[in-house]
Image (cartoon, rainbow, N blue to C red; front, side):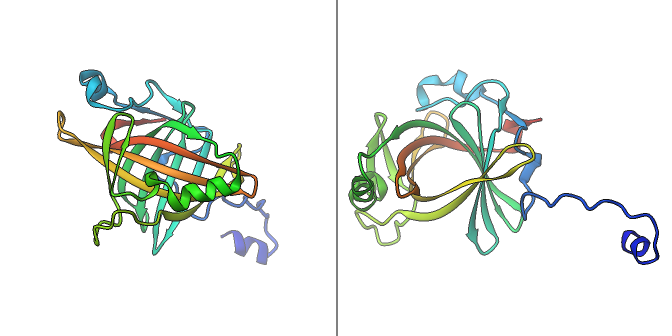
Length: 220
């Protein structure tokens, strides 16, 4: 009835502030919310994993949105302790949940060296790589069984603050690898990403993670 009130001279209600996102955030997650992981499998088999997810409730100071096109999106909720929870959606329906922990950040000495890493380094496209004492196998681009394929390129918009607002954006040059955790009949993932924030700001990150379900999460 709000527009009728205005039309006929009734009491006007103040306009609500515009939503910071043009889409809904999945599972009730939000900036300044908190999430905790069920870490029982790490405690039970500590030698089987390359990393362990953080203990206790983690704050979410930053949210990243990646529009993959065709109604497919990645939602990244960055945590207090060098990691993030990633939710993949298709037309708002959840397709997958992964949690990643950052293991290493490499800072190329120059933009030319950064571009050379993207074009030439084995960790961005080789069919098989060695990292953190493990052997990892490329997840994408295996149709032709090429020894090396180009990285996957996508843009991410970052939001911070309260109320949330756009804070930054970057371009990723990424490759996802996996390995079997045979002790638990599960998989572990290695995401290698060259992150381009602009002409003078860039880095390469290594993050290791695994698939989760909603049963593994406590969201508050």
